[in-house]
Image 1: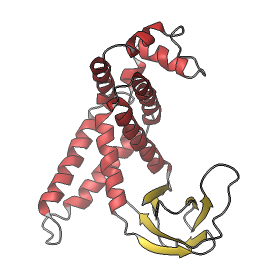
Image 2 (image 1 turned 30 degrees about the vertical axis):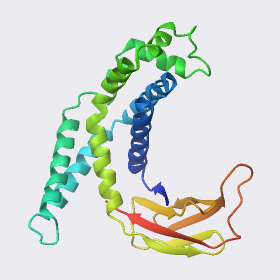
Image 3 (image 1 turned 135 degrees about the horizontal axis):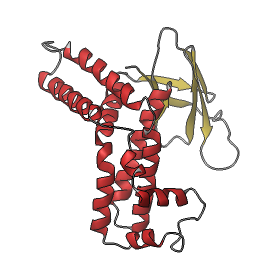
Image 4 (image 1 turned 90 degrees about the horizontal axis):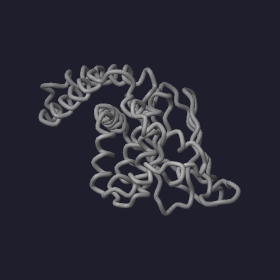
Length: 251
């Protein structure tokens, strides 16, 4: 099954982008190949750009506070596993403290490094990172794998509180919804949202179905158009019935 997620606010869109970048960095940094470490470094630059939003830390702190208040009210509830609840609350408190202790813009440690900024500047030029453009970077890519890995992890470390908060908020958001089985015969699905105010819409589709959902929504209506995968002109999947799970997630 493949999950397709559609955020309905810029705040959730930013968190999803950060989550994707953190996961991408992990894959690249775990590889011994120098080209993978090159991709990991470029991903770090993307992280710094996305996380530099002035309101990111404030938004995360406010959401962590709100979720802690909601969860703390469940203490003593016989239908809630107490140990699991305390673990989640402790994680929220730890992430909140970590973000509160961050000074300046997220990723400022990268911007303060002249060597890294020289690389970032050349990265914006197509083909601008050849060895004759950046000989010192070429030398870095030929250092031992362990040495490059240590530096990559050190550059990522200051992002840890942000990553913890993103994981917590998105985890709670996804857990808030229950999937509903839906069906379409003509490749198009529409639903009025009525009193729902979702922050995230998830469409779960069997990977064997050769179609992908194109989702658009506002506070009134949800539209999903299923189109065939692959290259060429986009064509609606009007020639086959499609079953899928639809989940509305709200913080």
